[in-house]
Image (cartoon, rainbow, N blue to C red; front, side, top):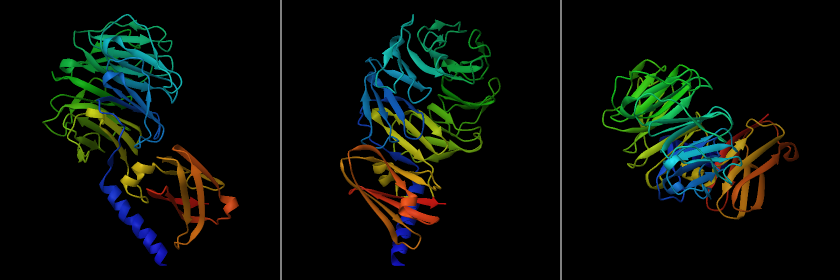
Length: 402
């Protein structure tokens, strides 16, 4: 019985530690500013920014998992948008638009007719997308960026962000409280009254009728696209990015390194511990339990909803462990990031703390997946614990077999 008490006590203590810290530091190897973060799922994502750098991870951003890619440009990249893990675009200064169709292994410059700086890009599918920037400028493509056509934009204020609900309906925001709407794919852009002259730097629509816009002087506006309500959490911040995973739950990040979260569409906000006072430029959530943000001098953070069973976030940062499917019946997989080649031990314990199986693998560095056959192990139905140890770090996860 002593074994199970020790194992479960360790799990309980480290889970409590993980619950207290929801944003975790990861080292991307960068010292230049990260202007844009985009993940297609909980493990695969890109960061890009000053000097035209771009890096990719397939292990949830854990330290050591980032691989540099060649963006083909040296000017700042301001925004990334991926329609899937293979195809996406990046835009930036001096008319920069580059595209990948292989997950970033190669990025190809796309030709268009302007040298204006682009700050935002959005695609509704692999063919149809928009880029916004200074001038003001809005370009649209219907052939994946082979050609880009300028659209008529009212006013003279630069645009910083765009979000499309579908191929017809969308919104853009920018300087001096500018907010534009379209219902015909951008053939016509209309000016909406926001009742603010503060620059609006980012917007996000969780549904067709529930959107949020953020900017200078702490502005956080809740909108359906035409009516705006100020729901700002504080009065002394410039917010640079916003992301909502549904109509009620979202995050905003700003110049002082602060991260605010709401679970009731901005009626109340909770200040989360970002572990930094440096500027945060971008926040993105591939789903409601995992998110990422980037900022000044290569700063990068990952958010995880604290789980009921697990090691502390420092160990998760080192291993990035996941066990799936869970519950499992025939096979289950243990995925993790192996920081250096060598021996890895996977142990299974039952609820009494008794080891029921020990597997040893000599694996190269990088993202690894070990598949385990439940029938070969002859394990009965029940609750188990999977412990992964690479010699320097370990992580524990609960597994249900049925």
